[in-house]
Image (cartoon, rainbow, N blue to C red; front, side, top):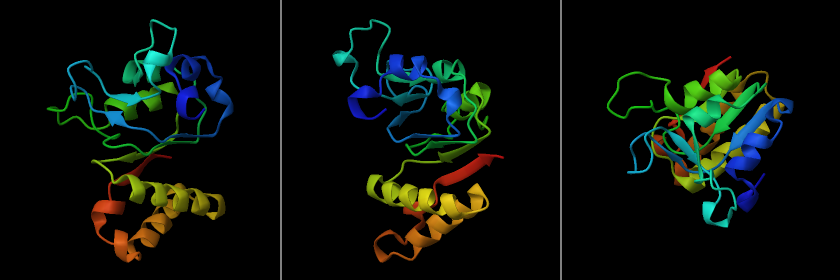
Length: 168
């Protein structure tokens, strides 16, 4: 699903258990980031285009936990996807990360802070290419990070260091 097809109802209705790798290239919200969200969420397509009253454009952590996954890897290339469900909490791997594990993901590629869009696009493209050739997810991420670090435009760790692989 891409662009306006990536709605909450379509994500919830899809048989996600058939996919070994899922990638969500969108914006994420930490819990409490806006007045409307009390839990972490992925931002999906514009709910104004939907006829579904349950659709608010946010795939919340609790909605994620209700998905049925069988994924070796879920890529969350948005900002702060490793953040906890409570922005004041020291508890790690809460919110979206914990929800994806509860839904059946075995590993996640997540970010620890706000990410730069263009650098993230390059990093994820490099990661996907390296992952097809690599023996491990962490080797593929390392390769993608080194590729960006060697690019003068994206050499600063701000551009490539926010990402981690968690899980197996």
